[in-house]
Amino acid sequence: MLTVLGIESSCDETAAAVVRGDAAAGRGAILSNVVFDQMDLHAAYGGVVPEIAARAHAEKLDVAVGQALEGAGVPLAAMDAVAVTVGPGLIGGLVAGIACAQGLSLGSGVPLVPVNHLEGHALTPRLTDGLAYPYLMLLVSGGHCLFLIANGPGDHERIGTTIDDAPGEAFDKVAKMLDLGIPGGPKVEAMARGGDAARFRLPRPLMDRPGCDVSFSGLKTAVRMARDARVAAGGMEARDIADLCASFQAAARDVLVEKSRRAMALFRERLPGGASPGFAVAGGVAANAALRAGLETLAREEGFEAVFPPLALCTDNGAMIAWAGLERHAAGLTGELVPKPRFPVASNPMAGVWTGKRGAKV
Ligand code: KG4
Ligand code: ZN
Image 1 (cartoon, rainbow, N blue to C red):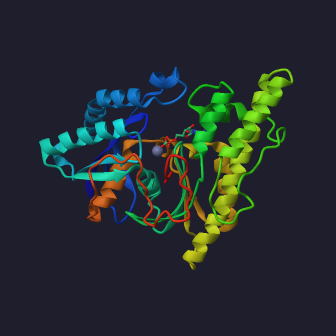
Image 2 (cartoon, rainbow, N blue to C red):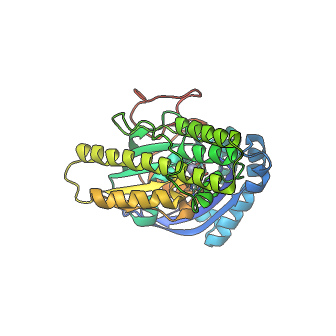
Image 3 (cartoon, rainbow, N blue to C red):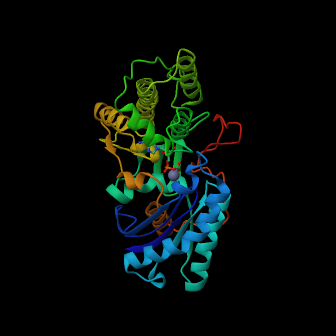
C-alpha cells in the first residue's frame, strides 16, 4: 500500500489529492480530492489566459494542498511520494506546480515523482475500476485526442491521434462562434439536447482514410459556414443554434465512434486472444452523454468492456496525478523534474504523425 499526494496545475484547474492503493492490484482509494477551477477568472476573455492561470495557480496551490492533506487526515511526512504534473500544459502553471511540489519535498524529505498529465488521464480507469493491462484508451480533452494501448506505467503505444484540433477544442470554438459562453463543451451539449441533428449536413472528416487518426478542423469550419449562411439568410434563431449544436455534436460523435471501432480492430490485431479487453474513455469530452452512449453501444458490439471513470475524474484533477505517481513510484520509474509544455505520453516515436502548426499535439 502506498499513499501519494498529487498536484495538478497544467491548465485551468488548481488541484491536489491524496490517493492510497496497491499499484499491482490497481484500484485505489481517494482519500481527498480538491479542485479549484478558474472559470470565473477567464470567462470575460472567452478562453484560458495563460498569465492569469499561472498567477491563480501560484495563489491557490498551497490552499489546495493544505485542504487535500487535511481532508485525507494524513500528514505530509507520512506520504510515500509527492507526484506533480510536469507536462504537457501551460508553462506558467507547470512551473508553479513544480515549485510547490519541490518545496513540499525539500521540507519533508518525501520523494518527488514527475507525472505526465496525459498518463494521469490514461491510468484513471485503473484507479477507479482496477482495469487490467493491457487496455485500449481513448483520451478526448480540450488539448488532446489520443488512442493508446496502455501496457503499463510508462508504456503506452499511440495508435491514433488528431491531425489538427482536439475534440474539446472544437466544442469550445463552436460554443464561441455561437456565443454560448464557457465552458464550451457543456454549453454545446445543453443546446444540442433540444436540437435536430439531421438539420445541418456536416462532414465526418477522415472517414475515408484508413487508421484511427481524426481531424476536427474541417468540421469546425463547416459549422462556421453553416452559421454564416443562416446569418446571411436572416439571422440565427434559438432553434437554429440548437439544431447546429446537435448536428455538430452528432458529427463529432460519429467520427469518434467509427475511429474507436478501428482502434478496437487494431488492438485485437496486436493483442489477439484477450476475452473482453477494456476500452476506457477519459478526458473532459468523455463527459458528453451522446458520445458516451455511442461508445458504450460500440463496445458492446465489439466485445470490449467499456469503462468511463466518473465525470469528476474525467476532467483535470489531482487524484489522477497521485495515482499515476503511485504506479510510477511502485515501478521504480523516475523522470525529469522540468516543465514540458509538450510532452508525448506514448513510447513509440512520432513518425507518420502529423505534428500541426505549433508542433506535436501528442
Ligand atoms: O480534460 P479536460 O478537463 O482538460 C484538458 O483539456 O486537459 O477537458 C476539457 C475539455 C474542454 O474543451 C471542454 O469543453 C470539454 O472538455 N468538455 C466537453 C464536455 N464537458 C467538457 N465537451 C463536450 N461535451 C461535454 N459535456
Ligand atoms: Zn486534462
